[in-house]
Length: 335
Image (cartoon, rainbow, N blue to C red; front, side, top):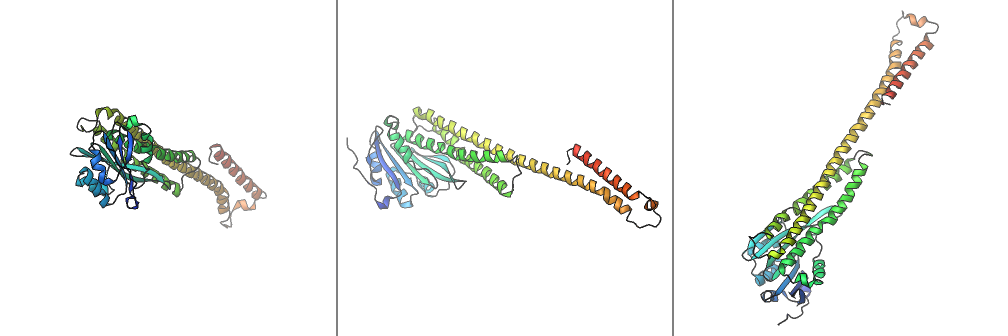
């Protein structure tokens, strides 16, 4: 059996993360792009190429090796695609969204996957964990990797979906802090803005993850004979993970909605309590104000002015009424 010669990418190939040939699940050697097509057509050989934000020239070089469709290459060059699966002849083109938490905001990247008989090419754009981890992990399990390019596709999709969970866990920790503090005091403008951003990021993450359900459904259907039927349970497992992500996102969005509503209720309750206190003190202070207003009218014929004990009597009445009002308001919980 012929083996490819060892190849070490030069400086001009900095966007080539890896370009390797596998036989029976074991990496034989690294190869240059220009030899990839030839080795992918050999029986039981799988070429796995990983690219990071490649330019047009590099994509055209890859296209020439595997006869990739022009529309797929155009999509891979411009990283603003929705998650999808497209079939071009015997080849498949898959777009998946990746997510990472950067400075407390969810940042999204894209992974474009070309898969055909004997090859898989991954193209990463934007924030994303390197798939070198996937490659290194499964290279220790040649029995699994020997299943071919279908298994490599599963491994990458599963890795993308699993990387949603650390993002959700960090968001969940922040949501719990918001939930714990919402009953202590109402949210200020900064906290409300952060809550809105979290709900928005969760919605964007949901929109990024959920379309992969349809992608995996098609990968397990009879309309794509390129995918080995033995791989269908693995893709259904990815679907289950996506559903879990969806449920977690929906749960966190509901908690944030309840937190905002609770904050409004707490704020309204505090405003009502303050209003009651102000109204109570206003009623109490209205009593001496009323008496002072009456006896400050300066009429000549006011018989009470000639009473020997008029002044202390009026003071006693004022104090008595004020004390009674204070007791009553206190009893009703207004003070």
